[in-house]
Image (cartoon, rainbow, N blue to C red; front, side, top):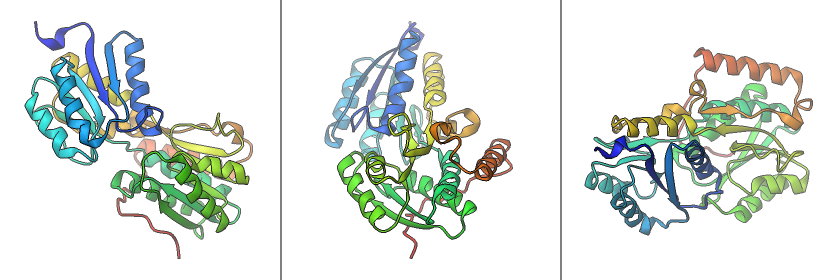
Length: 309
């Protein structure tokens, strides 16, 4: 009997950071939901060093896992080599590269659409017209979200200024917090929290923050105005379905993170429902409708964003 015909798919994931790190938490959540539905058996490794990544991938492939997920931004070559060595396994990896036949698919958080909408909210909420932005690394995946956010803010306030910095880590909340404090000292009154730690600084100083990937408003009800949410379920569920039916092949799953597939969305304004100016809310709703209808396409700009002079 072919492996993929088993009732429960054996799925493994390899993460280079803790599962509570926001980006990885979205993959983990989608896989746990599939597990809860009884569709998959799911095992994972977190905090896997890049130097160990290939070894862990091979272990999972040897262990009979049919579908293997992870993020391979720093280990592209090694991961692709493993996929070649295990042609019967299916690999779905967060990657800057292209798919590789026959079994290496890629995905990414293409959430520039809600990032643009969250930028509009930020532009409308900044009283001084100065927004601080803290990112992990200036890689295309981060840059495109920041640029979309900046364009959205400028649509509401063309004179808005930005202070941009990168902390050189995917998970260092104290460092992100320090970077945010420095921006607040320079006059930023709204902060784009691409990383954990930024919203803590905003909360301590009585400033506002915009979230990324997950909705942290429940933890920061007076600080986080809006967030661009990433939903990995459309991507993960499709990969599971294809792996189960033996139809998995190397393809780009990136588009399934877009709003029309419900792979991303602007979080509800929640505690800020009545605090965001009505005319800004109306503009955001109109822009969201234009995105969903295809009338407006959020530009994808992947160069490193710079601070305004």
